[in-house]
Image (cartoon, rainbow, N blue to C red):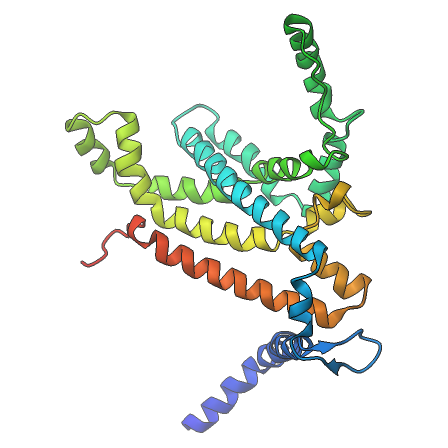
Length: 304
């Protein structure tokens, strides 16, 4: 078979992917870049306005609020989810009876669809009959009577101060994916290293710090990068839980405000500009993380 014919057959077989990738990925990306410099409401032709959309962001209070909420959520949610998943992985890596059952139980929340889990948390976080506040009331009642306090269960869905803590708690609930990655990494740590550390008199903490963490650092780094990218695009949970808007815009995230501009206000040009700014922020943050954590990540066999 001639090479030219092989090439034609190869292109024929991958043509469905190439066509789909061009129509549904490359074209939208290029179009959004053009629309970011336009005043475009979808219903009428786009009007080129240059950098007006980007300048408007500097004076848009809701844009600033969405960006701030996203940054705060990222700063707290990413470390909390990583630490929670790592602690669970350490516990579930122990040789215990029913280990497989425990692993399954902790992994299940991560495979529940986002919409379904958000509806579930709406019930759990309800101030009046939610399970969380129902569990907190007896404890707070005892503290109030014992110490003369005036504690009340939080208004998770109605108090602006508790909206982001509620979402962070939800994120920590669904860390099963990261937990499985950490468990796999822990299983790959050579036992000889632990034995050598014990011979040198290292305790459990020293072994975890100087053996376990360096050996699983590539996986930690991977989950850090993916967590940052995912948190900057946080969208579905606040949309489901506060469809009418969170109190004081406390759960107005960057991606949610972008969605509102595009599909509620039909400001597609402004939304496209927001999307490209978000892309730049994610790329810059990822590059910064790569450069700043390079010396903390150990790859076995590197330089061999």
